[in-house]
Amino acid sequence: MSHRRPRSRPLPHYSSIAAPLLALTLADLSAATLASDCPAPGQWQREGNVVDTATLMAELAEHRVVLLGEQHERLAHHRWQLHTLAGLHAREPGMAVGLEMLPRKAQPALDAWVAGELDEAAFLAESDWLGAWGYDPEFYLPILHFARMQRIPLLALNVTPALRQRLTAEGWEAVPVAERHGITPPAAASAGYREALAAIYANHPSEGEYEAGLERFIDAQLVWDRAMAQGLAEATEEAALVVGLMGQGHVSYGHGVPHQLADLGIDAAVSLLPWQRDDDCTPPEGVADALFTLGDETAFEPPEPQRLGILIAAHEDGVRVVGVGEQSLAEALGLVEGDLIVEAAGRPVRRPVELTDLVHRQTPGTLLPLTVTRNGVTEELLARFPLRDGVR
Image (tube, rainbow, N blue to C red; front, side, top):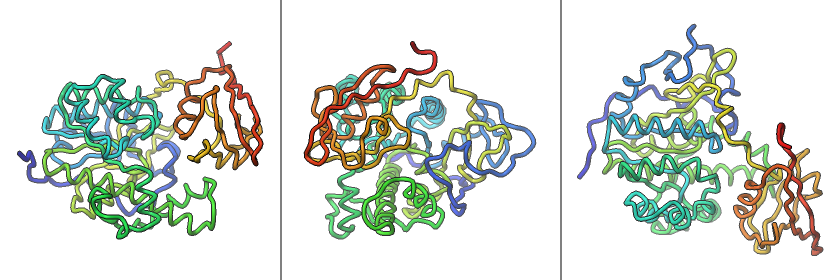
């Protein structure tokens, strides 16, 4: 049975403002000055004015789609998402939650989790959480438990990187509809979105001709956005309210998923983001339909995970290094672009996530043996992760 209600007047939507780098935090972006009173931590603001939480939740619950953007490694962002989900669910029990984190093939695992048929370990294994997403599941488990306890449907919105690559390389018509989950070709990127994506692409190492590589990068991002938008749109046929959890780059300035939703006939999607106050109390103008003000959550964030400082890609013989950060541990270790890391801690590595997960779990001051192949020559390297301030 459908729970849909008539659509209410949409919140203001911003789709024509050029977006800055999607990788930047909201406090880093250029801004227009707010009204005189600066929102306090815990307060929502809309168009520069504080809005009562109960009033906002009541309005949001009348919409078809609400998007909650995040920085994936910010614990405070996931806590904010959980609290917002609870507020929306109190207003609209006929809610569903869509997740960027998992591809559609993980839907059976999500269904079994909500039904209470899997424990945490079994769910993470059956969904291939680390392979599909890679970010620490501890950030997301409170949200997943909330959905399970309330029997809120969870929806896998994403597609696999292999399908994104195939659609980008072969074109939409070359991939049968059934093999692309019925996803339709995306609307063209707006000028502002292209500008933001080009800025990101320019900061990453690439292979081949720049312009062709940029177009492939943009096309892949559009596949990503369209897949999530279509999953959300289809869910509105059954759920009264669908809430999407995804990276803030897919949400900001009305680009990305909101743009694709509008092309699918849902032009009243609402975008929400957490915002860390800066000294001038000046959030970016038009970045979202409403912002939640965070206090200083630094003391409550987990330590930064360990990093080698490399960009890596899958390779049939190991994990290939495609970029090395300046002044990084990898640079000091002597790793260079083109190296193949074939073993870490004495175990073979075949997928980037295997190496990333192992590195993230290293504690300060520990050593990680790496077996590296370069031009057919194998070498043993020893990565020493530095001590953090206050750690002895």
